[in-house]
Length: 215
View 1 (cartoon, one colour):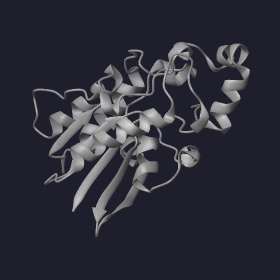
View 2 (cartoon, helix red, strand yellow):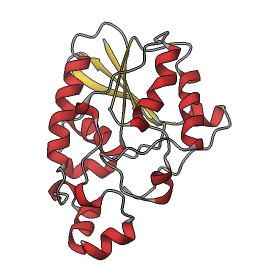
View 3 (cartoon, helix red, strand yellow):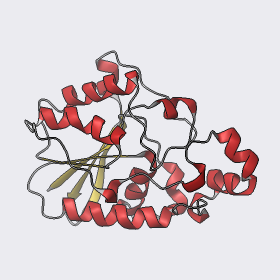
View 4 (cartoon, helix red, strand yellow):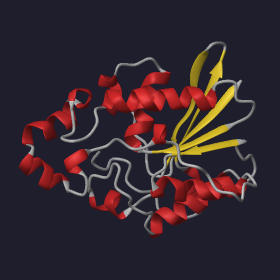
């Protein structure tokens, strides 16, 4: 049996303010750092044997306590396959700013995301292709639990791939910052064992960021 934990990175100021992220380097804010520590405590009893992360700083910062819980003091290397979607010209802008400049594309992103090409950036299909390839590479034949620290968009494309769903179902998965989802490969298929688990945050008295934030 292959067991994989899909972890969304902790909160950043751009998350909190509703600013489009993507390839931009945005560190965890104070809440995000506490959430990352809560993840370390969560995995302390049963740490994953293998840990992979997006190369963005917010994901690497989130992965660090999990890696330490597993006894790895060398840190986690970033994997571009798990990077956030490249939002091109939208990065660093608020939803209000984007809607004013690209009203048609903005509405399509909210209601028909699989058909959106970010100006100067990626499509969901491109993200899904690289993320799924990376997922299969790190989970294939893994003897032990695998943890992947990534981003809201990227993880949702992976979940669509796991369940063999078209990207039109992309918005049917909601993942809060620092949430943990668990999947296992059993009898030839991927099975969801946990989705958007944030109990480790509540248990430690940490703030749970609103999972209904704008995408």
